[in-house]
Image (cartoon, rainbow, N blue to C red; front, side, top):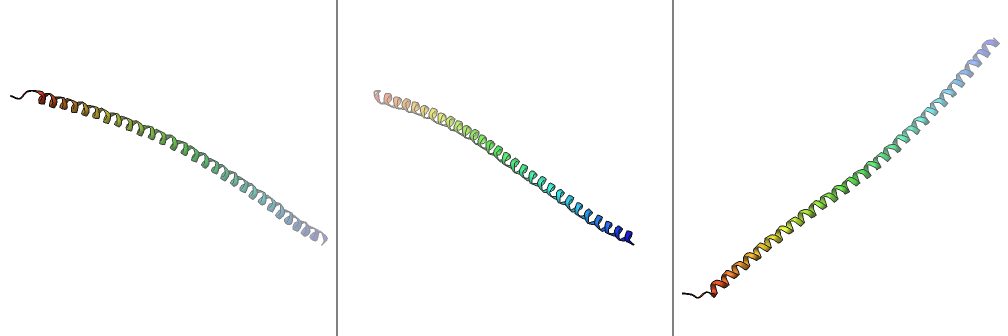
Length: 108
């Protein structure tokens, strides 16, 4: 009978130790998974920040290019307006000269 009691006690002790070992293993795995998840989240946050900075730089570059393009277009239009003003001024001067010369001629 003693052997049965010793066997039952050993079985109970084995089950208890097995349970504790399994619990420790599960806890270690859970901590490992949580640590891995935190690393993944941190890496994702860093990647998001990097992408945000890249997008901001690209947007600034594009904005600068658009600004330069707009300034060039404005300069071109101003030059065209200036040329047209000069032509009109020359035309007015020519018409004024004609009017003056025709008024200077004796009338018959």
